[in-house]
Image (tube, rainbow over all chains, first blue to last red; front, side):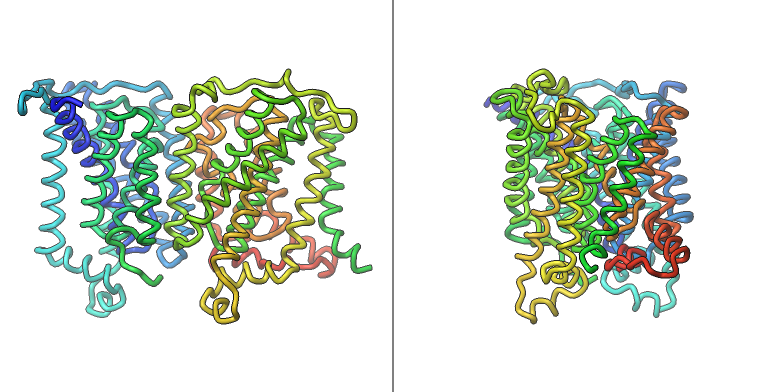
Length: 288
Length: 327
């Protein structure tokens, strides 16, 4: 394998990892704080991508489209949280999983109704190439990686430097104590859920120019996002970061070696890791 | 007559199904029967062992492709094909079960969903040379006619599935009566206590997992024989929720819930697809609605109605369907 192929493979893997990270960090936060598995994150991802497509073809500006996608993600997440999740936080974990899968399926149906089933291309905002060690890399892919890194930094600052963030971290440890301190748990949950939804929508919008947007895009990325969350350990943000980097590289390098490996290798890796550590790399042995 | 009491529920239900055969089209009835068998595995896992599995289509596809490979490449006897598919299902679910049943229920659900997607891509892309990818394998003409119960004819296929259905339901009802069935419930409710009683949680879960998913694989074999072709579409990520939806629609943990749920679901789907083209929207709304309304599913409501009509002579199902999801 030539060095150039390897470099472009690594960059490709990094951009994949960025997308996986943006979606799964929301899933992981929701699980850690509210003890729900929110499959509907994949819906905000799809809606973000489709809104980006519609607005950017209408106005010609990709960034306007991305903005529209993220704002619709926020509104949708807020609505779903208020109407549905608020009533089921107390319930068992599987309950939230089934309900959110229903929301995801219903949303996919709605997308099909609005936009049809034909995959649609989104133009890349700029198609410059940069040269890195003699390899041409699309600038946009690098930008995706940089943006994801910025988001990680932002989340880190938010969780460690603001009162709300600190409350969220404390809530992951022990929600009852946090409530006892007089912090409004319902508002904390809403903020976390909307944050997760907006990050998923951002991931969808950012990823849209690199793939075709189609109604099933959420389901296609679902398996990989799950692998990231499972390998990293549910509820751990650090674990999510490391495992998304790992899965991204395995998918990318694996597909260079032998194409079908791209799908099978992360799965095999997940099984191996679960055999050694049934709660993932950084997952605590949580008691429900 | 204790044995009549025992058989009553199953025989009456299947008797009603035979009666429905005269009013409703045969393909619909065949679909209902096979789909009920497909769902009862999921129902058993969710209602008895407390495992939620979004990965059922994976096991369905393993069974279906096992049968399809046999009929497409090797032989012609449909009964042997079913046996081959079932054997594939047992072996596959045993291997997978060894890895999966140790996991906590949240990880179990996620891993199963991932498995379904992987199996989909495996049949669609990785093994495309032998599975013919998206085109699927067509082997309707390869199925030889057999002297008794010729499976290539829909009406005789119906009779065969009917007999099989009675046997499967009797098996699951029998399981509820055994110590093993009690252990399954115990491992769902309090695994520490069960451990202290001297049972192995791992073995019980593994056995339950293999039984349930072999049933699902058997449904896959039946699909393969009945349709005469298989394609990766049957395990596509959009369909992973089907058995879970039907289980919850029918009533979790109730023995006859899968049949009631399937009739409602298949019927609604056929009616709805005439009016609205995209049907995920419809399934999603039903699923959210049932979850939010917090009922014991259709069978739970039906059971209450029957009890009121017949003065409580109807025996209640052991799972207490209404509380099964909430635990």
